[in-house]
Image (cartoon, rainbow, N blue to C red):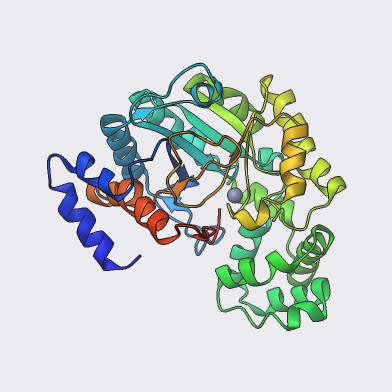
Length: 349
Ligand SMILES: [Zn+2]
């Protein structure tokens, strides 16, 4: 979207009856779902370049905005077929296992009476390991691209030679990681650690990026439910049945054991429809995940499809920009994509 939709949004934002006007762009718009990752005022070498960080004050302002202009709902409300959604429903979600969610975001949500849904990868609990994305980010920031390229060549061989050389972290994740099988991804990570002499567990301990088991158990006190985001944060497009049992089924079991509550929702790592394969859909049905979330900034229809819920990554810093992100741009994207398959993929999730 260029500047015309943003100009239109800021003009509309100033009109008192903007909510009526914006419906002309697409009347059939139900649940809004917003996505955050890491709430922090500064980046570290583990996150600088991933573009997943929201500063604390901005987060608090956005939550206050949602509480004032929308009706925040919980997953319970969505899954309760007998309960109608309120007029302006919004659900606040978080992906990945960042400790800033219980430490920073949870008290803010509780202060405003806003429920949350946090999609967690159990592999990173207690900082037992470092996710591949955070490791790639750290290596790129401290050692450069060379060790990443050589580890990728060892893991993926000739196939990756055709992919071209990545320029940045997005290029590495989308150009290299999407092309690797689960086994190759594990080898890529092992080769990267070997080439750099780094120790993932030691780095994870020092970085203290992820939440602890105790913090996971304490989320319910803040009205935050725990959802599944795969065990080790993998692209799901190449996973076979046994990979899915390990990544989806095992993660669900671990999170349920730790929290004592059912895990009823799944968020597709990286958020793309390309990873929402028939095998993944079948696996989610078999494991009684009642809902699945993607990262496509499209309007959810009033008749919500629980197996395909679209979310908007919140990047805005001002009320008029949030209005654009939630009300104007999704409707315009739907108009532009009318009759065709939506492709508004986020670079990282
Ligand atoms: Zn993620």
